[in-house]
Length: 328
Image (cartoon, rainbow, N blue to C red):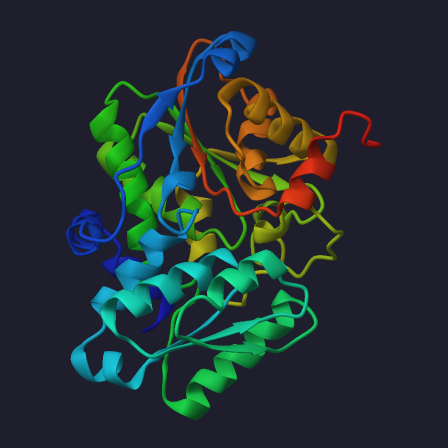
């Protein structure tokens, strides 16, 4: 499918269809007010707790939307995906639930906790590439060689429609929302939420957040096109990596997202620590990025939903991140 055709097919009908397909498999996650964030930012802040999905992240929505969109022969042949962790875990869970053969390619740099979680399911797990970018290129080629359906973590219209169901739920649960804050890596969840939110309630502002160590989409917006960036290590490992050329997430984000801010590693650590202290939530760095972004956005006086995308972080990483003496 061409990029133009994929974009044309992403509308509320596609989002509603994805919501119906995935309903038997995903949780309608709560939208809970955060007293400390509301007080700190002079706003009404609520957390959309996608960390409570069965696999610990929002990725289950997109994976199930893509899997359930496949026809019988495609399901029988099987699927192949590339993942740094959460998408692979979601796809493994979904493939097991539907009886679809699945192969998942992970880079050598992937979180070992997330890789181990994938091993709990009947999937073929292949380690290829030093980093995510290399693994993605190799996985695309492998899917073609094997005749398998490739399910991208972000560059897939069905995946984006699945992630867009978050916005649908948010505006059903609180039609008075003024803004939504969403983490951004490859951009699937930000693109989906922005698209659905603007179609359902054009007045709602949608803001993205990235780690300053890997500002892929911010660089693209500044350049007016996708560009390759140099990355530094980040606690938000699920958001790290370049975006493949021609990804449909970029034009959706450029068209529908109001702004995208970057946050430092110190900001991410602080957000992880304070979410645990005040809301008793363990969140991974990729989710903490959106909480940290509130300090960089004009949220005062608004009703704001923050999408808490995942909880899949090792205990060692979490404890090191929240240590108060951690150097900036």
